[in-house]
Amino acid sequence: MKYLIHDSTIVTGNLTREILYQASILVEDGIIKDIGKTNVLQRNHPDIAKINGAGKVVFPGLINCHTHLLATADKGILEDFGFPTTLKFPTTGRGLLNEDERNIFAKLACIEAIRSGTTTLLEISDSIEDYAQTLNSTGLRFFIGETMKDIDDAKFKDGYFEYSSHNRENAIGKASDLIDKWHGKSNGRMNGFVAPHAPETVSPELLRASRDLSETYETGYTIHLSQSYKEIEAIKRVRGVLPTHYLFANEFLSDRLVAAHCRYVDQSEIALLGQLNVGVSHNSAIGARRGAAAPVRELLSSGCSLGLGSDNMAEDMVEVMRAALFHERVRRNDEMHPQPEDVLEWATMGGARTLGISNQVGSIEIGKKADLFMIDPMKAHLVPTLRIVSSFVHNGISSDVTDVMIDGKWAMKNSIILTIPEAEIIQAAEEIGHRVWNQLIEENPNVPFPIKLPPEPFQDSKN
Ligand SMILES: [Zn+2]
Image (cartoon, rainbow, N blue to C red; front, side):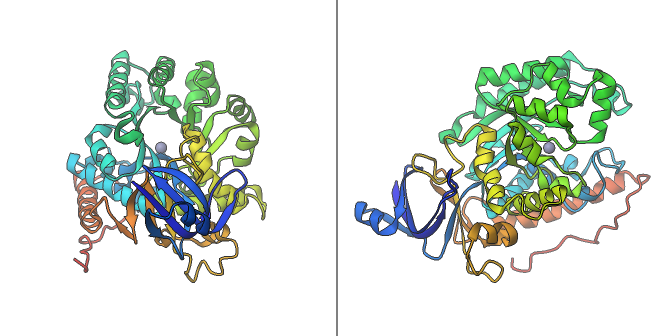
């Protein structure tokens, strides 16, 4: 299949951050085959299908380097009680979802991802096989990593750090099964990843086994790192060092690692991460909600690659970009750095480098896969469009995004999502979300909960 998207403004995201006007993109079999002035491309390719891109701005698709889609079931609650949560329930709403309901929240999260121009996500969770086919059906590009840990959870709750070979073997088996089943499927759109959970829940043996697994399957691997003060205290107590040093001592750091968060890393940890060219997922919006800022400038200048991630409860990468800009300017007390173009790069090529796919996606360049989104810039909050990247990063909202293409196929066209029945999923998620949180409260009457839930879920008046 071959077609020309014509007469658009194209934010290429290439090395020189070039923007092309009155330009066209030739896509054939999911690959960008040509880019240039519309009159030239129309002359060179006269008889192919055309898609009118007039009045639109085309951007490279946004890449989310760290998320947990099902956490959208805890939206509006868990943002405001710290991490780990200070609520004393044995689980959260998400923990009460059955398999069908997990699929509904996976779709809900993917709707939000597509609507915000996302084309690639790294999803990390338990039992992903329950909803992997759903992820595949959305048309999004996925890296999926089954959470692996070998700590004895019951003892961990009481403050003891004991690790079990039984848990370890189970975790490795389940992670391997998921990769065996999905890695490279759907024309390479579905990919496996290796995802040991966090320094405090993973033994040295599992750290080493995880890296071995990623080498066997030739995938990347990821871990939560320097996510909370509790993690740092625990690692200092149990291992005698800071979390990054614990990973380094077990030969875990490399340029194929995606270290998520890195909020509280000190100079020595930043130096180690940089020397080994570790990729960092900066989860700016959730970081801000938790009052913590990763040292972005220092990580970048030490040699890390940097991508952006949404992490918990929301999948809106437009908001994640703006949070990254605001957050880093406030942290540095610097009114000029980063610039919006820097932040867009983190969300596109930076993410692609971090996930090890910068030769395939991350920019609109000849030879890359056609992963892109289009916005309608004629909005009160975006005009005048003198500097469209700045307008969009500072003021854009996900509803500016009108079209999303992944692997040369439309997931959203003219603001309609083609791969998920949106209204039906939103209504179902609203009802299930209310049910599970009410259930949690009813089953745990002695747990203090400072929120009064509404009497019933909303009904969509359009249905
Ligand atoms: Zn996470």
